[in-house]
Amino acid sequence: MDHVKSLKCLICGREYSPNEIEYVCPHHGDEGIVDVQYDYDLIAGRISPATLAENRDYTIWRYRPLLPIEPDSPVPPLSVGWTPLYRTDRLAAGLGLKNLWVKDDGRQPTASFKDRASAIAVVKGRERKAEVITTASTGNAGAALAGLCASVGQRNVIFAPQTAPPAKIAQLLVFGSTVMLVRGTYDDAFELCLQAAKEFGWYNRNTGYNPYMTEGKKTATLEICEQMDWDPPDRIFVSVGDGCVIGGLHKGLKDMLALGWIKRMPKLMGVQAAGSAALYEAWRTGIDAMAMKPIDAQTIADSISAGLPADRIKGLAAVRETGGAYVKVTDEEILAAIPVLARLTGVFAEPAAAAAYAGLCKAVAEGQIDPQERIVLMITGSGLKDIASARKSAGEPYVVDANLSAVKQIAAGW
Ligand SMILES: *Cc1c(COP(=O)(O)O)cnc(C)c1O
Ligand SMILES: [Zn+2]
Image (cartoon, rainbow, N blue to C red):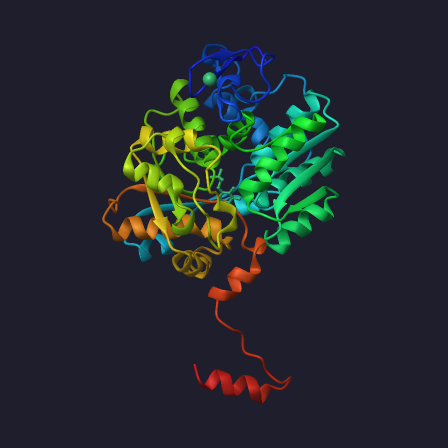
């Protein structure tokens, strides 16, 4: 990894070589999240928009010179990344906007954005020859780790709250993970996973703890800018729980600015559920990430439920440093967003993913958006992850006897 200069602590600024520390800066308990620092001069000689234009590898590994892995490390075979970016004129028109795109990460192999990070976790875990890779998860990070581990035969242990949606738990079990459903919240599962990893020497993928997850997640903005011919959008809306996804989007943009691939920084718009809005409140009141206190998180959007967001330093910086904003939306607004997004784009989102669209609606209603702006909605997970929530918002079907007269009767009423 000659292209990685150091791991820099975001609290005290100390820098470490990647061989010196595995996860966090040792001066702040488990909270000293570090950021990977790159040698951009070296990287510029290995990858550029011109080499990418010739590259037929349409996965996250097309950006390999910008990822923190060894040059000879094998990567998992599942096809992660290069998800579609759809121009969505009907969705745009409904909001009085001119330029709106949807990036559909429900199309990832395990149906969420988390595959981008878990793919890196599997590579790093295998570089370390880890017997077991572990993570705590509200569901998607675990499902992603489970699927990517299954693709290479890697043992793994997943900690998730017992309340995770059944589809996500089914994914874990089908992929053959050892599944620990924790009687408690995601924050409880996170803490237990940290303890277990330390006790048994497992490689730990935890969000806001393992610094390499941000690097996997940044591939989404690398893709968005490449898909837009290096003319970046003005704003990107994404839902936020722990803050790792939005921090990753920010990191990709900073990489591209440093390399001169893009000329300006899009504004990052973090959308939180009203019942799990710790970062929204910290942003609104202007407090420092390290001064945040845990809240009792409650939302139907399980993937963005986090009492004390694990990646709060990066999550706040992403919005503050880009001149974006945090927006909060109610569970009712999130549920209502699912069928609207689906009917106007053909993209079926889980509640946490539809929250990004609910946040865009709110920002438009509040007059935060110029209609000419070029906006990308990051859709982070598939609606099939949580059909119980989807059914609450989508109306009821007709149930008919198996004869045409029943259909005629209904059609007459249209
Ligand atoms: C994890 C997740 C998010 C939010 O990511 P954080 O890093 O926790 O902020 C949003 N949507 C979906 C579907 C997710 O799985
Ligand atoms: Zn430190």
